[in-house]
Amino acid sequence: MIRQPAAGHATIVAVSDAPALITDLVQIKLLGEKKRDENLHFRRFMKSRDHSDRILRRVAEGIEDQIDCTQCANCCKTSTTGVTERDIEKLARHLHIAPGRFVADYTMLEDDEGAGTRVLKFTQNAGCVFLEGNLCSVYDARPANCQRYPHVVRGTGSIASRMWTFVDRAAICPIVYNTLEAFKDQLRFRR
Ligand code: SF4
Ligand code: SF4
Image (cartoon, rainbow, N blue to C red):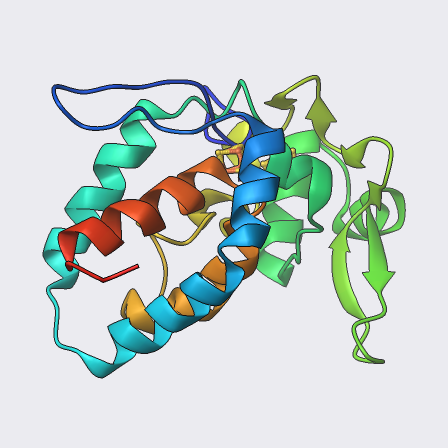
């Protein structure tokens, strides 16, 4: 999430003759929901055809470069972030406290169908405990999940294998919404 100098991403636009990107979060929510079925169809389309991840990654990087996460931070305001032991150690070191204290003060268990995933403390009103305005106060030590978010350019496996996360995120994240639209154009997907 937040790329900084960023907490998350968004504003922007127009490069040469490319259409302007949509970064208004109200529109992103509306359009992401409206295009849910189309995006599910596109996900199946991508999985059933060969395509070059190298080219798609370049397309996604072009979108990321145009969007300023510090104007957005929507991911940090709306989604919880899972943390690993490694994240906890790094963040504790960054804050000069013991890992145990970090867990007690800055994390909580999220009841993920009983699995109890450990996540950064989060409230509906303020989002992530480390969000200050639109910026991440622990940017240099942020969890790996935040570094890779929204997992279009950076992530494990092929882009098609990560598509299952993008349908929901298209209604939250301007990078995901605009990247999916650019992928559709690139792959000549018939809407
Ligand atoms: S929701 Fe997307 S565009 Fe907004 S801050 Fe997060 S990664 Fe950046
Ligand atoms: S640690 Fe919190 S504020 Fe920082 S990038 Fe991750 S979710 Fe956003």
